[in-house]
Length: 473
Ligand SMILES: [Zn+2]
Image (cartoon, rainbow, N blue to C red; front, side, top):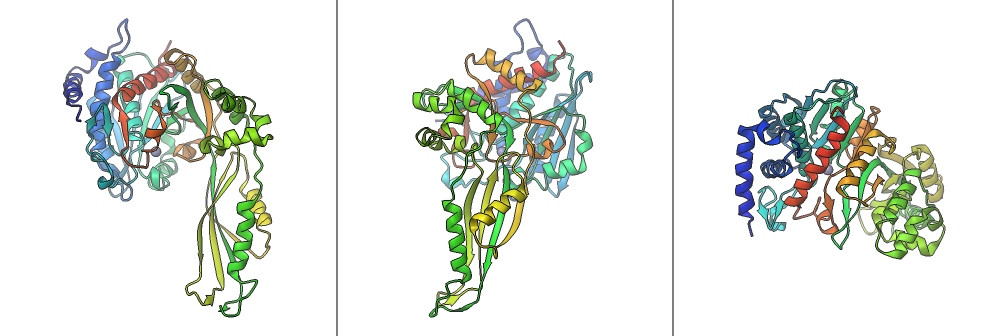
């Protein structure tokens, strides 16, 4: 069912807001009008979701122009930076008094593909049904981008003195690795962010349990390094009627068997210890809670460890992992091929060196003749969770969600943050929305949608975080 009432209310508020931007959002004794800001964000997100920025090919220029038009209408002058034909970054800066270093709000404009036939409602319709706003990117990450944009507009309209500049950056190509997006930006325009102290991006969210209650506010402070390897074995080619024990294929299978069967040693990093300790406090399952509370003991106790292993995301923080993803060899059933290869997707915890890990892989493979090539390597150091920015998120959570901890997360995936962490900026991946398992599965899946109420709350949470960090006291 289409939620048309909210649509009409939203449109009216948007038009009013655009005509009298200062009147409704000026800071009075009661603070900003969060419900009007939320309605405006809902309208903006609906429009943004209608712009198809699927990669490939992206066409993110259209998305950048949309964001630019909203900024311009609100008196913030944006710059569009073309990274290739029809692809562009957007950059804008709300000036403060310079007493503190700037904060960056980073978001990506591109989205992953969506097949309309798989979806219940059109992926580029921006429609509201049963109180949820539907569309590819509703969470990842056009929804977050609009929450950032709205919070920025609220700051501007409030007329308050800001101690820091607030920089807004939208990038193309995040889902394809960032060559035409964040990587291009830091290579060609790092001067635009060189003085920044903090950055807020996607990364982790407010985890919501099956019981509908928030468990914790997760903040991505570090991302595992991705190391993609290709292993090749070689041998004599020949007729398959006369088997060769040391054929390329046999060598590969023997070595890979050892890799998939290897014993993996857990590693507990300080941030991960903090994560489990805090998460244990709101975990309703008592055996899980006990396992999380003393993670150093848990990793050495098979029964307790099993509690953690059931959760793939949580357990990924304790191990350097290897997934065997591609195997290639042969072209005919009766021909023994000369070469066989496999590709491994390895995800390494922060601090693990590429050379050391490759040496371990070779040793485990147990065949010195194996050729190992690095297909890709993406890594950065993490950010500290003892900073003013992390503390600001904590102080907002303490008021908005008393009793719900804010925890650092080492995430198994990676985002555009790593390009900016390389510049020395402390980056935090925080999505200001409560997300349950059902909605989490829609990101990069089908039927992506955000509850309108959650979008409205997300704008408020993000605004409060910015207010804490930026507004002059
Ligand atoms: Zn994303």
